[in-house]
Image 1 (cartoon, rainbow, N blue to C red):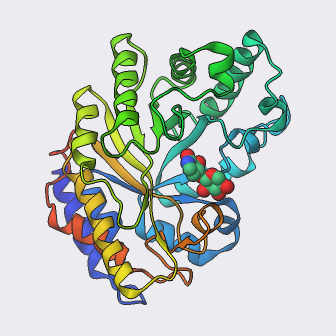
Image 2 (cartoon, helix red, strand yellow; image 1 turned 90 degrees about the vertical axis):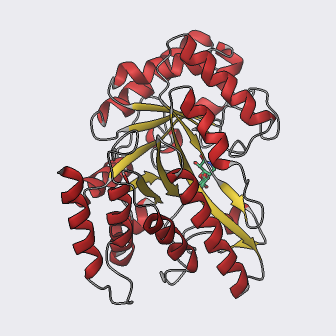
Amino acid sequence: MGAVVVLVAAVLAWALPEPDGAPRGERPGLARAHGIALGTAVAVDPLGGDTAYRELVSGHYTSVTAENTMKWQYVQPERGTFDWSGPDAVVGFAEERGLSVRGHTLLWHNQLPDWLAEGSLDAGELRAVTREHVDALVGRYAGRVTSWDVVNEPFEDDSPRLRDNLWYRALGEDYVAEALWMAHEADPEAKLYVNEYGVEGGGAKADALYELAADLLDRGVPLHGIGFQGHFVHGNVPEDLAENMRRFVELGLDVEVSELDVRIPEPVEEEDLAAQAEEYRYVLESCLAVSRCVGVTVWGVTDAHSWIPEWFPGYTAALPFDGDYTPKPALAGMVEALRRDRRPRGARGRGVR
Ligand code: XIL
């Protein structure tokens, strides 16, 4: 019955055209009908001042991730001083528009405040400070932020070794388990993730992540999911994405593609955008092919907001909307994947978060 209502609502939603001719709300409707989240990373400034940006987010997505504002640097810029303005804005917007929120991120080696990054805390102090941060952030949004990237990028960039970060140095490799327990205590209902990149296809780093996950689960540590970031280079999207995600599901975990973008080297030709659409379609299809793949999140709303040009000079056009907020073929690619797979909600391992 619930599935019928959702499908009927989705069909009605598709019937209403948007000014640009695209059916309004097709993607949220379809994603909801499939029981997966379709998300985007949002930034605080445009969320506050840009109506078109806000409409684009809630017209096309069912979930948001804060691109930066829930990171340690912004939440606790000085020791003991918390700034909730950004996180509150993201969560408030999501609630107003009926979107779910992925929490991103608790322990990461980047975007730390100076007082923490300098690494002067001993193990006991670091543990206390981490607990305080996790308690404050996860606790504040308990029941409202439904999943958290508790540990982000725990492995070295290009190797299967655990990254030598602040926590690893002070607490040893069990910091991952400690962090998961802290988050679990702060919100026992939240789905807790390890989020990583360069692990989307098989390989030594993905194998190491698999071993870590298996070990944590064996020990009863509250790990519920793996985020596969999915920062892909056009023409180089791994062919075994579904197969690789599936083995994590077989361990008993949820999986998601948490930060999808497909960057194209300049100059960008029409044919690149057409091929990029196939890559976006493929990623959605891969998620739909894996039970307990609970969602796909793209890393930014339009090409004007994407981190790619700044971080990967010479690359651009990584997202499903261009800098003028116009849908690109990539958007149609995602919709096509959702249209093709018509399994009703309920047929999947889990419903929409
Ligand atoms: C990026 C943001 O998009 C940029 O705005 C910021 O300057 C750096 O961080 N992996 C992650 C994300 O987990 O948090 C990163 O986001 C991209 C890589």
